[in-house]
Length: 222
Image (cartoon, rainbow, N blue to C red; front, top):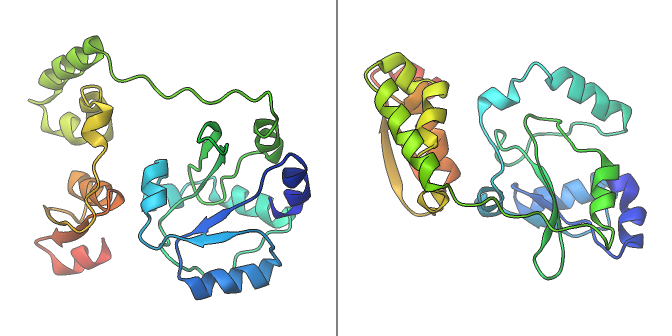
């Protein structure tokens, strides 16, 4: 988007970049890309968690990654040294002074960026604010709990991604709005499977996660 900063400012807005590296890395980033817009650093990933941005190894190993990298190179972007959290993915938000959000894009994998024209359209005065998702209905929660009782007896289907999606139907938004900063969580069987996914989710909420694994080597790999 750095090539469209003038278009952004012509619409009365400003481009603000938020990174998760240290301040000296932000200074080097500004110099490398010749940027004159504000650059903020968030090494604790608080803004990333609040925005609901994704992270994790699976997303970074997407088969679409080579195509995304090629598209970025063609647009003039280049990969410099990795700074900050290498597993954290990004996103783009258009936020008005009053706090209304008119655009939200959460990257699915590394190099996944939205079309700039969509962002510029969200900067227009007539752009409508995004409506917040409504809380889970009582019927949805009931359905989620009923389906959970069906899959729970079958360990494999209960603890894979499909099982998690079924269980999540019974989650309420307020149940997941938790800040675990300053907390230490011990996760067993965390080198793979649901233990690994749980460790990632707790880390996303700000917790310091300790992996408890039977095999030290596999734990270090995780």
